[in-house]
Amino acid sequence: MIERNPLDSRLFCGAAGVAGLFCVLEVAGRTGLIDPLAFPLASTVVGRAASLVADAEFLSDVASTLGVWALGLLVTVAVAVPAGFLLGSLPRVESALRPITEFLRPIPSIALIPLALTLFSDRFDMKITLIAYAAAWPVLINTMYGLKDVDPLAKETLRSFGFGRLAVLWRVSLPSTAPFIATGVRLASAIALIVAISVELLGGGSEGIGSFVLETAGDLNPMEYIIAAALWAGVIGVVTNGLFVLAERRIFRWHSARTEAA
Image 1 (cartoon, helix red, strand yellow):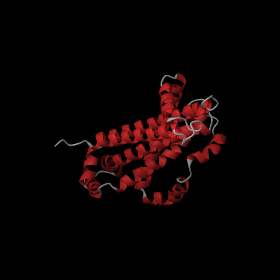
Image 2: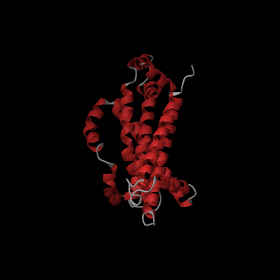
Image 3: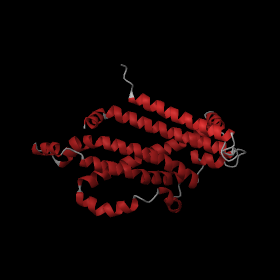
Image 4: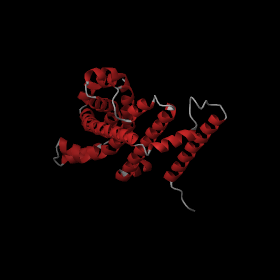
């Protein structure tokens, strides 16, 4: 009997779901259930999205959004991972700062755009700051959670051999926490992309997918471009998430095997 790869099955089911949604929207548009003037036909949107591949201006905007996304995610990791280790390693510090984190975490970054507009004269700095603020929470929480999962026996063994706190952190805590950090970064990457495009839409600027949508809003058929651009944003999100998942499975294969065994 030939065993079917679970990944192949998920890809097939995902492709079937997308194709089914496309057919439903196309039929609804052609039968009048959905007004084509309010929501273009699915085939029209896909054709417009395909034409954007040859649009140099759109490609430049995509590159700008991806650049901001990548830099914002890098800043997020550089800030949230050390903060997570600090809070996870020092319970008193975590208890003292918990009210602040619980107060700040529910505040949506989009709601802070008006405040950011007054604080930052540079739109690029504003984007990076808001992305880092919104994306830091899953990385921070996953880092703290990963530290709690570290085997205490392994830490005590190193301490009994004379290793200090930093050595134990580097040799035991960091490797054990790395898969949790990777999961947090993967979740943060989706948040970072959403915030980047949202800030481009609401915060102004002349570059990015959000700015492209604003510029095309005055065209003859603006909804075609808007939905096509949103479609490409979704594709970018799916691709980046898939790359992170693939990297997690390759790098932390031992962790996946341990999780499945448990």
